[in-house]
Image 1: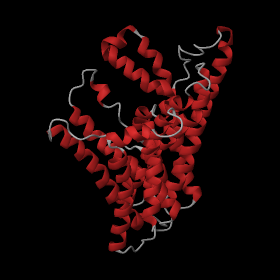
Image 2: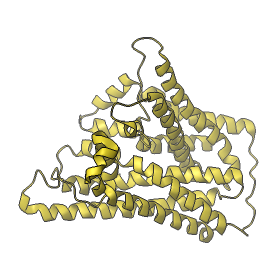
Image 3: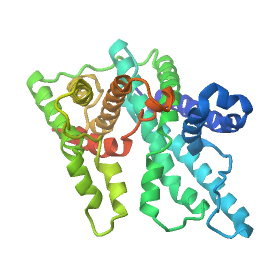
Length: 350
């Protein structure tokens, strides 16, 4: 698929993603209306405010709280700059990534359409996380924090804003694939790659093993605690956990309960999804190159995490803070998925 055909879908999806997030962020004032608390409850309003906050241009109440009130305009300017960078990075990152993904896996044929859709959906989360992370220094400075506990604040920013992107990304991915599919009409047939079954299974197993290192070994509670406390600076622990841990788990304290087993089944589902996706990708890609498998390795890891998070949300059952809180974990773990997904794709290339 040529760049000219693929860029149409990527542009349409990027605009859709940015507009949806901007519109949702602009709706944060609605949570202050008298009926909002009655509709969502006090905890629901608080949770929704946390979801919408990273994408709103509305100046936060704590803006410059630790600085001189006379500098309020300067802090306001920093916050507006942060949001401009955030939306700019969001659009550029999505455009570049979706363009590459669609070229390597054109949405032609039922299987490729679904794989393209899921990959672009996952890439929306990559774009959102990168946008929030790169704009975080300006947003942190706007709150008057400056360099105080910068790394923990950066880690906190990296872990925010993903819930909204999950929903908006579904729409953006659908728009991207539909427009790209229409643009692909009349193009040359997608070549079929011949991949040896044994080699594909071995490569998928090696890639899945890389994901298991983070999901099972590093995410074990005692290991995670050691990562948190390691290093010359204790403040770097939060950032290290964001980049290295795909989850968190511990041994059962009161025997093998059903809930604990279901949580471990959710982790196993992540690995199964990653294995099957890495097994199928070499035959579906137009060219199974090193960069392509690294990019798709990130996408399949994120999609696997989303599958596991859905299972966890269902297993959790009723939440004392309301139904919204059960879904707060959707889209978490993207920074670590980028690191280990890229490594998994690189290993699977061989």
